[in-house]
Length: 99
Image 1 (cartoon, one colour):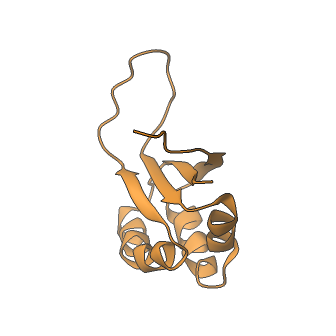
Image 2 (image 1 turned 60 degrees about the vertical axis):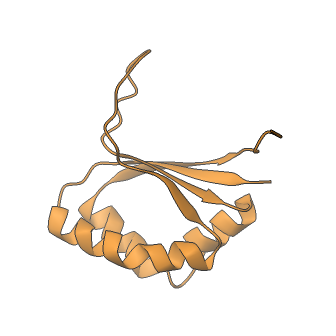
């Protein structure tokens, strides 16, 4: 089942976060992930979500997402992200409806 990492990122050190953004895409791709949303403009319609910067990454499964997050390749990038941009993250199972 397709799963999604949904991340709310509060960038506090843009220079270091830019390094993270440069280095992380190949690691995400290695685990079958792909970006669906990369920090576009947020326009609240109902309620106040309080997001700073929203990112959604699709993985082929929750297992693939967990392997990415816990991988030795991601470990130094995770530290870089957390040091430069405190975040909140959730893993959500989903599906693609038949068309």
